[in-house]
Image 1 (cartoon, helix red, strand yellow):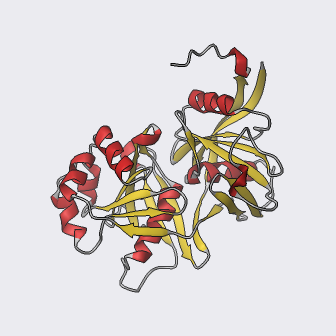
Image 2: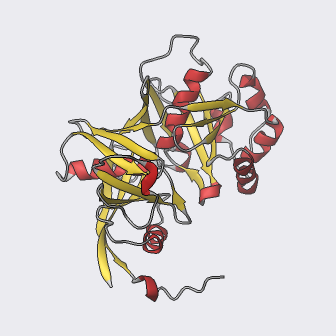
Length: 314
């Protein structure tokens, strides 16, 4: 039975035990899908990133998602399933590697299941992940139903619905974006996981991202909460892929009446005691999401052989 190094890294945070914890396996060469899934379930983070050399791949994932050379290959697993793209786990991976001197600053090309992604590390350790050009589609949905799924007063959605519509937005992983009038109403959310999952299935999204411009910090653009029960994550503390999608949404709906800032700052995680902040830049080439990361746990995990898991399949 072999061992692999495994980390828990807090992304979009400057200190440990805040932000969004991601598992990171810095050397995933030769691990099978089942082994990666077992490691992710054991670590218990919302997602775990598995890093392999760009010339090969970790396990049997879709290598057709990118053409040409890549520096690295990343695959992501939640405790229950593989995820095609994960922002905070990407930030966590390269923040941890940079902090220990395993990589230099600058830009790298990372192969994922949705294509090649550019990742850059600044001298201060801030990691930037370039996501796909955003796609945003305004949808017609019953606000009473959405409010019931989120466990909020329907008036909290109607008050802003005329100016800010509900939409499906994606930069690689789609979310249903739902504006809410005030932070107090957003904080009162008590989601019905089954109802949120039903909405997610109907609109073919990973989950629901609810936000308000009524933020805690004066320099924050908005406060967000992300509910992703379809991936086994009732509430994701600080979400990179959703933040990129929401940055694209804000531009698409002209949320700032033409006076859009050069960079957004999204705050998230405070209602689950994991506060963090995401920097978002919407550029001509796509969306860039950035933040810092800090290692909370560094150890080894024993990985059983595939044939020795003794799990009975139903």
